[in-house]
Length: 277
Image 1 (cartoon, rainbow, N blue to C red):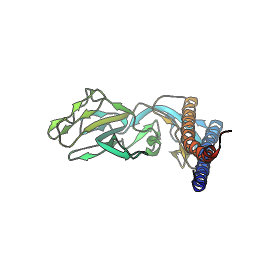
Image 2: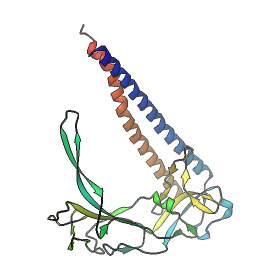
Image 3: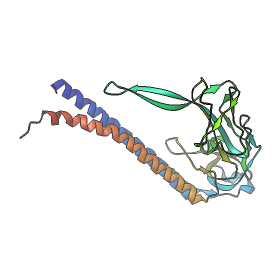
Image 4: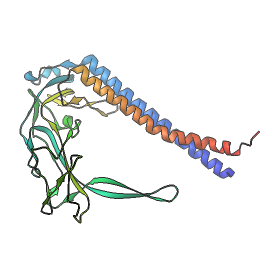
């Protein structure tokens, strides 16, 4: 290794170590901010009765409520004919595509992934009721977004009819997706559904101006504090803490990669120039 290569390796190593240190600081700081928010909620929350609805006296406070959901309408998917009482019903049409990348040794590696797509008369969609309530409390779409899209509905569900593609029904596979016939010229297509039943909700929210809003930590990041089941306050906080811990470990795992590479680049020139005793 030449002197210039050694210096370049050490500079790049130092930059990567600095990047890893900053990333670790950001991850730890974000998690500490979430911990502080959860502690503040635990110390000052108020448990409300869903049947009573919004009380002006609780404005500016963290409120916890749990109860049965009332949706303004049932959701219907026109493609499969599915109708159900749900907080969200999501359908997706995906196309399998080949992704090629060049490896470090200049070899081409091909992998396959599913990407959202649209075909004439067939596409994915997102359905939500116009109004979702727990007792007298209206649950905003922002709060409901934290729930995600729920669990898959298998294609074998008796409530579904098969989507039609190029005038032929798509087949139901063991993985729960509908697939287009193998001989179509358009390639590999699959259609799937997910949903969250409108049964129960348990959540912590900040009441402001007579409405429930998402809880944000000191850095402005929203903290998920809503679950689609009947839980008590301690359970909702425990799940939020569990997610925070998982995100912290995942984040530190990611920043450890450039950190390890940076350390190697810093000490590699020393190893390569060191002569055996």
